[in-house]
Image (cartoon, rainbow, N blue to C red; front, top):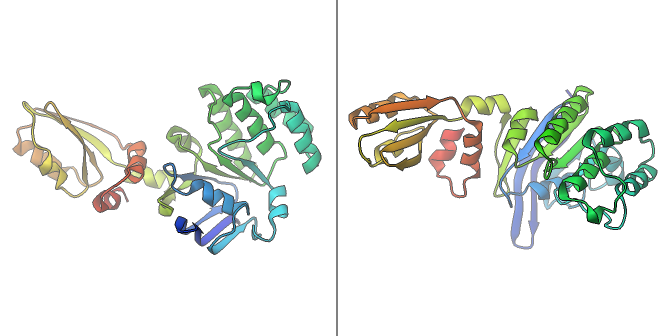
Length: 305
């Protein structure tokens, strides 16, 4: 499959602050690539580097086979972009925004644009300053998709949308990649990521901490086990086990996330005279939160992998 985005050793500093450091990943044609991380992790900086809005301090970026620092206009013609903070002209209506974008871009399929407007119930005839965040977001989605770009770069695309429209967005993404086009999606919505993303990278403190398929991460995701005891216990014996993270301990209940074998935790629980045990399947959200946690221990990161 052809490579649409290729990033190698990418770093960007602002004065003494390093926003991203030695970032690397590839995105292939016809896939949905998720780009996740907590606030301030470097997601928006990376996106701006992909679009040529920032110049890298070091490293290499290729988007659609071109260098964003030299071929920014050619790249932008083939990209649909929805920024995390969508800026629209407050006095213009949604229709005026769409008409202006169509004139600038040219070759917009107006029938397809109108179908997108209908799908998202976009309000086009009021000044955007009078619209809610969700209604402004609908206009941003139409602007990003309406010219059928080869690559869509979407930063928090469903912010402000109700659950029904979030599902409509997911259907549109699936249709887009079925046509061989590519979606690069940055999101905090873990449900959305699990629903639409094929592969993902998680960035934290400006560095990529994991890149994998969603299914690969799911296989590595922790199982949750809860033990009930007759009285409160010290969870330290569990915390010392490899592949075990203590999620909570209160009122005689200890909840664990297991990425290793269950036997050692079961033996500790038996020694402490556990009254009951419940378990549930792997939770991808908990794996994400292991990476998001502000100060994860080295063992937590190792176990999550």
